[in-house]
Image 1 (cartoon, rainbow, N blue to C red):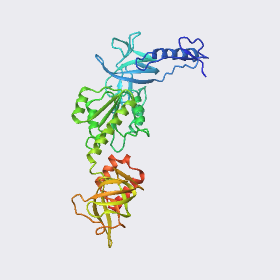
Image 2: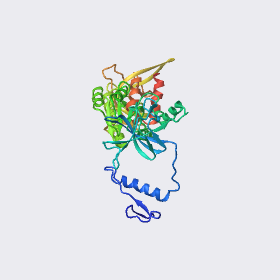
Image 3: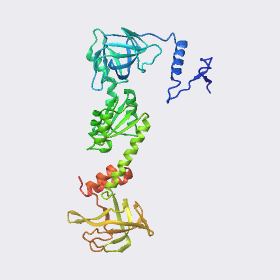
Image 4: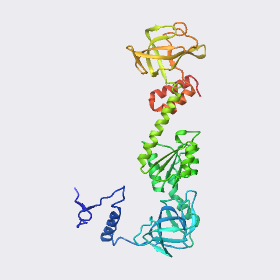
Length: 425
């Protein structure tokens, strides 16, 4: 085992591991953890700590501050930033090239997140958290690197370098153009959410992405799916706010917005929504869906030969359900014709009613002509004829979109076999 002790009681840091209690709810313990890391680094890694002139800087947050306009909070890890430095920042609409107008830091013993007066600096040396004011930062992407363009450096090359952070994210967008719209607070949280949505256990297609609060333009982009796949006309908002205008537009258009600070909660909300959508679709198409089946009439299985026809059958393949339209295949010379017999009105086994029968079961079925032309066993068809479900292009589409998870691979192969038989395009 490991020797452990609460960090404020630990007097032998080299031999005993320190434990720092933290709270994700209140944030308590985080300052203590950071202090412990600094103390540990200063105590044991002084010789390895080196200062590097190359600027290493990351955008933490994009904010609008009264009197300063749009600003970015950055953490400067290495190097020096000066007022007037030309910088390149990754933007949601492309690289942003601008110049530093002001370098601001909070008053001593104050956090940068807390409103108040700021201290102005002509230059800031690492390592510090800084607020930068400059023009054109509205589209800056939190979580990306800030690059300083030095004398003689190629601006176009700096632009490409700045946008590399977005390449991996953009590659996750579904090429078909179908999927949900995803919004997150920073590039890092967006990458984490996209990684989760693309995992094998989830597999939710992504049509578009955004960083920062959800605005009307994001709702418009998500609303493009209303006419194609209504279940994907949704915005998954992870750890971001939704503006009042965006929520009003979403309600008007019928776009769903799901908000959560935890990825799994966001997925659970969406999963429930998709389940409800599928259930609604099933109810709407219940009268049109046709499951694939092939039936063989049992010897001495004819109980009633006229409408309603009652037969004993063996389910050779597929799944037989109440309401399935049944037909037989007739070959006349070189032509193949199909004769509709009627719909399955009921299924029984040992006088017990069933909703469905699977491959290998022997059951009694009642076939109703549904007020069409009445067929008679012995005149229109016989015991040598196989009874097959009469599928159509419409019924195949319904099976694929609403019932695919209820059909086994063998049953779907039968659907494809019947598709060729009925010459469905």
